[in-house]
Length: 336
Ligand SMILES: [Zn+2]
Image (cartoon, rainbow, N blue to C red):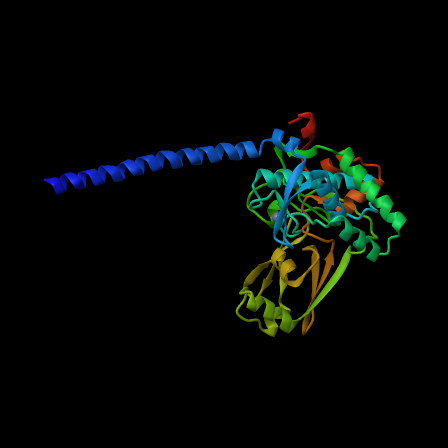
């Protein structure tokens, strides 16, 4: 009898512990949810003048001034020689990108990182000055450029881009002569209503407007085989490679190699093509890509923004041109 009673005690004790655990963890989960929502409120973002920046070079997280961060990103992402309205548009894109990142918890233990492939390019002031000097700019030109970027950060303070009240994913790229690209055509099946293909005008003298990449038959085959796109490639199949599909912006969507379709976006990464706006020329032992533009082509084109700014567009007009049906709002004035 005693042992049975003892057994019952143990069982009820275990059950009791389980119930208590469920209550505690259930509460914590709810608490986290509430914290998450509060963390991302626009009001809090608006009052935030420092951000936690994860420095990928030394693995450390540090607090930096928001304006300093925006200055360094803008100076790293767009030439200071560009028109002031294009630079202002870039600052707003950088601020919007950052806010979107914070809201969507895009960075572990920090707000944003310094890796241009993951977040936005970020060079410190001394590095920027060195880059500009290496490019041959004089001290005076650098000083003018620095003032221009500072002015763009100050004059657009608090301004971000929203779509139906939500901070957008402000994608941008260097150059897409003719048209920008619809985000859906490249990355997802999900329609992103503000990242549509729009017409684009760019200056012809942009140095990376045209580029060529030539790859030998052997290299082409080896890269595709080692990345498991194909198992083998005969000379005959090689000579029959052709474009199988275009996107709405006349970029290549995919090419056909043997019986395999390969996404143009994958080719861009695999062979270092500047964009997917290309034609191909195939000879006996090599394939040549003639490429137009630079980058994925989605969102704002920097070269285009500069072109429109020269034509008298304001930063608002530039942003409205590249991002469909968006609003430009100032979080510091409580516009959202
Ligand atoms: Zn990052």
